[in-house]
Length: 60
Image (cartoon, rainbow, N blue to C red; front, side):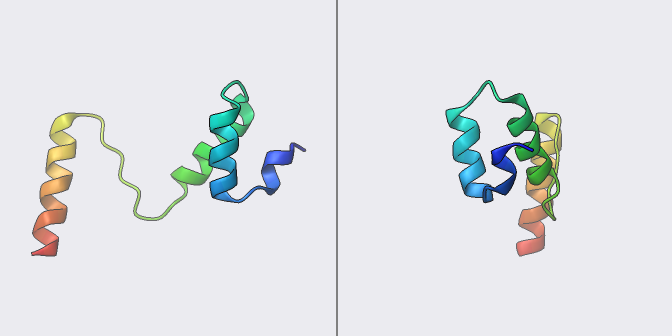
């Protein structure tokens, strides 16, 4: 078991930045980011624009 598994999210982020060759730690960080609620993935500028418009309209 790697040492990065016991780090907080902020500590893990710093670790990944400081150790860019540690693919396992990077993938663990990505899994944490992907698991966050409310996460939206966009693949195109058009999708981004549509999501931003939707959020602006919700706030109005």
